Length: 218
Image (tube, rainbow, N blue to C red; front, side, top):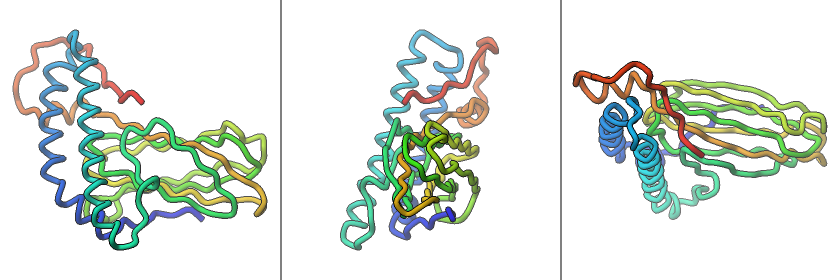
């Protein structure tokens, strides 16, 4: 049965060390978001892409720092660690399970999509959100059915209020031992317009109300 997975103490420590950097990034992102992206100026798409690149760099630096610590402790890192956004990670389950740890989110919303691409097995899936301290915040569970008819089926998880929180993804094989479950994992992030406005401060917004909340491109 899929379940919430524990975050290692080493990863929690590194996340704590990066908390100020995450908060600084979000404050800067809020200014850009309110001044350029919400009003939809000509540079809005370019600025959004720069924010996404900055978010990726921040998460990557955190995971590199974690790797230096975990590398000497025998902890399993590397392909198990994901950043937001992640376009596609592929995998196969055969009488086994798989866990992914997603770096603390610079975004307000996290969307995880698991898609079955081939095989006769199914999978139980649990996606959990955890505070930077490792404590439980939210949990969502879904399953993808056994059988070839379920090829192409997706399980989509939407997690709100995710700024500075971990995401764990746990997949557990279900079916005959010889059956496989091939899958892809996609992780997306979105900024919340109201939260960005609040972070940016009380500066009056003179633009119209036709803004939309842009999603990350993956």
